[in-house]
Amino acid sequence: MTSYLLDTNVVMRFCNPSDVQHQLATDAISRLLAQTDECFLAAQIIIEFWVVATRPTEVNGLGWTTEQTRSTIDQLLDRFPLLEESPQIFPHWLNLVTNKKVRGKRTHDARIIAIMLANGMTHILTFNPSDFAGISNITIIHPQELMTLEDNES
Image (cartoon, rainbow, N blue to C red; front, top):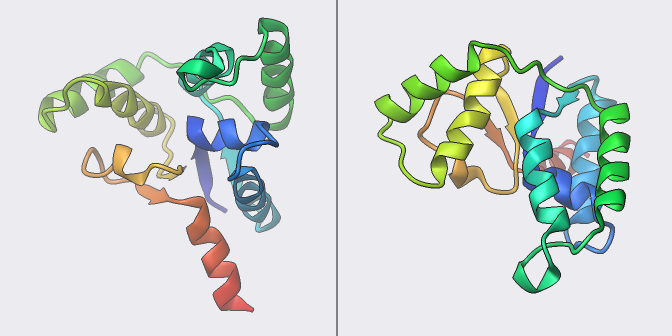
């Protein structure tokens, strides 16, 4: 059994049926759960989800109300366990950004990896593998890879 952190972009597509990649996100998560893997969320992911869900559509958001966003988050938290926000996250993050010379926006992605490291996780499901490439020794899986594996096993 492998534990996966669901990246924000996977959660966004999973929760938004009108997204063109909604079915792919849903199928990938379903596949992981069917093979007895575990899918987790982190507070950072939920915060990023809130930002995009409540941002106006004109600026690449979903334009959801705070009530709709909260309801969706409550449903997510009922379905997927939330990783602990521990004091170990900050030292992992600080080491990552220093040692890998991470700058700018990628510091958010480094914090996601720090959360994973602090919780002993090695796998992340993401539509943007390049966001995490070269930051740490984690396994980065694109949802399409899971579906390709399924096709090859058939």
